[in-house]
Amino acid sequence: MRDMKVRASTLPGFAQSARVRRLTEAEKAQYKTDGYVKNLPVFSEDGVAELQALYRDMAKRMPDDLDVNKVNNWHKASARVFHVCRTPAILDYVEDVIGPDIMQWGCQLFVKHPGDGSVVPWHQDAQYWPLNPHRTVTVWLAVFDTDEKNGAMRLVSGSHHKGNFRHETNNAENLVLDQEVPEPLIDYERVVSMDMKAGEMSLHDDGLLHGSLPNASDRMRVGFTMRFCPPDVKCDLDVWPNFETYVARGEDRLLLNPRGQVPNGERYPVRRFQHSSEFAS
Image 1 (cartoon, one colour):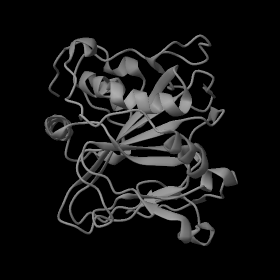
Image 2: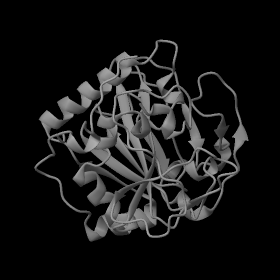
Image 3: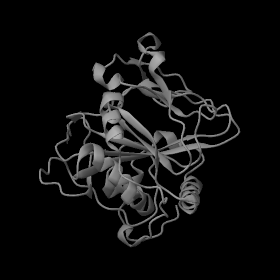
C-alpha cells in the first residue's frame, strides 16, 4: 500500500466554479417538499480534472479483488478525500438545509464502469442507519457526467414524507445493497433521474426512496457521497460500534457521538464501517 503523510488542513482546495452560490428560497422549499435538490455547481473545469485525478489515484491504490462500492468511510482513510469534503461550496449548500453546525460521519464512492450490470435497488438510507433523529443529508458529487444511459441515481420525489417503507432481503449478485423496497410500492410517476454534469452535486434526505440502474453506456459513472447531519443526531453504538463523527463546520456542543481521528495519509478502506484508528500511523 502506498502511503503519503500529509496534513489535511495544509492541502490546497480544488478550484471551485465561478457559479457557486447559496441555495435559493425555492430550492430550500423544494428540499423540504420533494426531498432533494440537484445540479448545484461546485467545481470548475480545472477542479473537475483534479477530482477525476483523485478518483483515479484512489482506484489505482485499491486491490483488484476489492469492490469499491462495498467499502466506505473514505474520509477516515484519505487526507485528500477528507479535504474535498470540506470544500466551502459543498458545506454552504449543506448548511442551507441543516444549519451552521455540521457533522460528517460518512463518505463513499459509487462506481459503475462502462457496461456495468450492477444495480442499486430502491431503498431508503435511514433503513440502514441506527441514527436518531433521521436528519442526515447526503451529498452526491458527480466525478463524471451522469445521466440515464450510464446509470444515474433515480429517486422518488416526496417519498420521504411517507415514513418507513417495507424492505425485503435480496442477495442477487448484481445488487450493490441487499435490502430493497418491492417494485409495487414505487410510484413511478414521481421518479426523477438525477442527471448531472461533472463537478455538480445534489442533496437528498435520508428518508427518500432512491436507487440506480445498470450503466448501459461506454462512459464511467462515479459519484462521491458524503453524509452530514446536525449535532443532535445520535448513533446507537450497540448496533454500530465504529460510528464516529467529525466537525465539518461550526461546533458540536452536544458531544453525543465519538469523534474520529483526522487522516494524515493516503490509505484506503478494506471493509465497511472501519474505525479511524485503523488508518492511523
